[in-house]
Length: 241
Image (cartoon, rainbow, N blue to C red; front, side):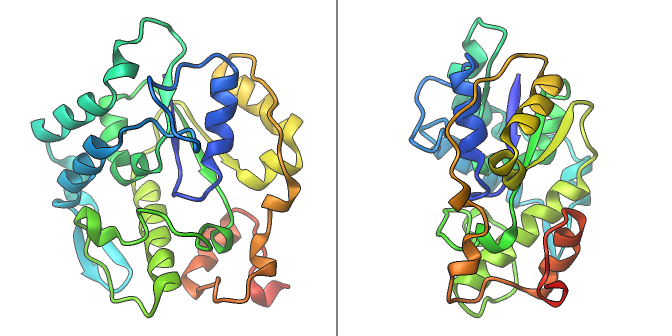
């Protein structure tokens, strides 16, 4: 099994479409973004998870409880309902993609320790340009500082999800892929994915203009708290440009 971890607008549809085109069963019904739908049970599962995350104030959250506590039956039932078509599929190549998986990633790892996890990364400056249902994490039960505006709210969501992924022990089968590399150096990146997944993959159409869209944006798209992650993934931050 395969799943994709990554915040909304990280370009995760590219890998979902690649897997689908390669014969990986991604669920009974997909939307144009390659998400398994309907999503409501996954949304409710995220809200169950959110009850156990403690906000420390500012941009700090305590994930100790979700990392150590028994997983509630309610969560497992909701997740199984959402994934029913995938779990019941008899084929050996299967998986799913929906950005909200990232919001419950610690419990997904514990329920599916042998699954292949692809962490899909994109410059946060591009990630916060468009609206996504996870922009306000309070909708999923996560407390957070007051945002100055919509862009700031999205940036807080990005920071929360990055911190949650980093706080979770990596599963045995884990690969990190930058969206920019997939677009600008597709062949080498797909070959890396093929080695990791141990299956041949299709090549989909990619558009270079999808990279660095923030350069044509007139709004605020950079926040100081992006810096550690941007340095980790070799994105240029303003003082470096």
